[in-house]
Length: 97
Image 1 (tube, rainbow, N blue to C red):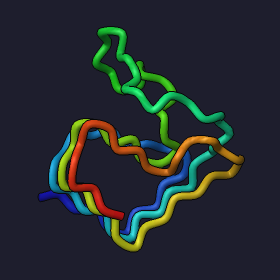
Image 2: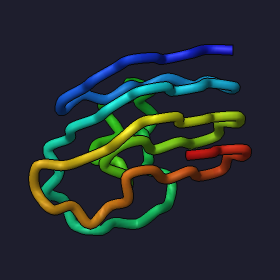
Image 3: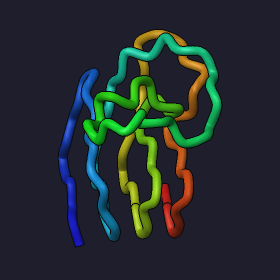
């Protein structure tokens, strides 16, 4: 099991493949400014570098193929209005906020 506690991030992203992760007291301040987009899985074009995927369909956490992710006492905000959700879980299970 992995735990991320007392974390504050501004304009960054955590890119990991994990199961059974708890985020406690994690606060993200993201730039925002994107329109709503498809909630489908972004393509990596055969490049496994996470940055090759481009804009994610969520402004905070885009969760794909993960299980047992829990957020406790956490917040997600943006500087500019954003049409994407704060958290999007795609092909996963047991996610709690």
